[in-house]
Length: 452
Ligand code: 5AD
Ligand code: SF4
Image (cartoon, rainbow, N blue to C red; front, side, top):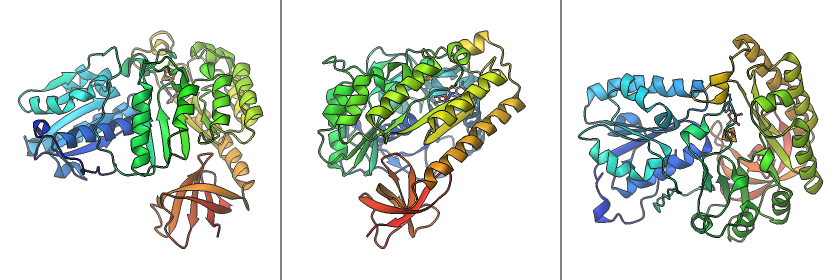
């Protein structure tokens, strides 16, 4: 978590958290990371100061993820450990935000009565005021709002690549997915706000933006009614932003018009995350995904005929209820056929309130899920090694993100395809675009040296 700049003046009226020190622990997806940055901005705006560890703070904010049971368990075990801190100092406030707060409010209240504040994703603007109130009595805020909740604080760390949320929530109700119950229905941010935030990032020196939303393809500007391709074209005019990416796309909603915008707006990277989830039509139907395997593959053909260099990534769930050995083979076949640059793979985890958890027995045994996950990952590892080998000797454009965490003399960055490139350089190229000659590779990253 970066520390945030405090170069803006704080209005005296907003100093209700003056003197407080806060620490944010973030679990989960990019949207959570971005939300945490905005919440940090809200707290800084109220006069609080960000500190690097929970022990030094008097406000501990835990921004949580509920997408799989493992992520929820991590939150609960952290809350258990925080009891000690709370017992040692009653003055410490503990706030739980994010998807677990929204979904499991009552359980948190019962099991962890020392939690002072529980705030769902739709209520972040109220956070500073509620932190003030929760000094007297525990507070919760999990009500839904029908419109977009804008959080603009002006506090944003300097950086190279920045997230910009364009929509939130989901109307799809894939049968396994808890997101519609934690983030609510689709809400679209006005394009004017998206443009302004992107311009602010550019003015701070950011070179890349990543547009965020559960399903960005269905974006519609609430003011003008224009769609996602028009938004990309507009953002392509922001000076200083050289690369634009977006997550996540839904295969059913990915249009030819959007693919054309990707091709025609030079800043949009030829890289796309398009979750397929499974390769079998029966499983896709039971997941309520709204496309078949061949429809998915047609989209890929369309994308590759327009942009032969496009790098694709995907999400895979193994062990969905009823997934037979044959169904699973279909997933492996899709991986072999498409040859994704990267995948994120998970074993099925039944989630509260979802259709699959309510109506389908979790029929694939744990050990079998593990075995399938291993097969998926080892096939993908092989594919990535082969794809990386083909890049050896090539010179790639890379946006340098900074020194590598493991070795300060090595720099790390990403290319347009979103592959991680670690490289040696005689000077520090952080924040700039450089050409890197690829000299080696592993399954998950490329190695190289700065091209003189
Ligand atoms: N079990 C396993 N994986 C899940 N995902 C979402 N819900 C579940 C679940 N219940 C995965 C999907 C999604 C990614 C963000 O998380 O692959 O695309
Ligand atoms: Fe969940 Fe499906 Fe919506 Fe993605 S599209 S957030 S998987 S319900």
